[in-house]
Image (cartoon, rainbow, N blue to C red; front, side, top):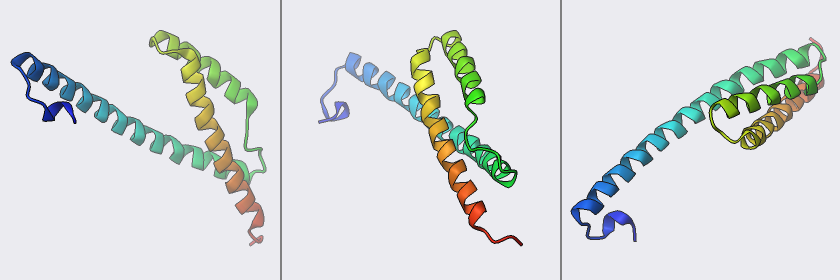
Length: 113
């Protein structure tokens, strides 16, 4: 049974209205994050294509290290757990590297034209 299915007092109705408003804001943020990630992956796709075209490795450990440092500092400034920010970034980077490896292997398989 959801909260909205129960008989509510005036105070409960106000709490439910606040809850729904907060959830709407969370939903809006989730939508924005999804769109931002999509944009990020469009650019990392282009990076992967550029790397593959020039025989560069899919991963760049020094860049990743610098980015982790930068994001941990940003997280601290934003009062976000830096360890969480690093885990999120590591997850995204692993996916990006996977895409870059796939791009490189498909580029290598193409006959020279």
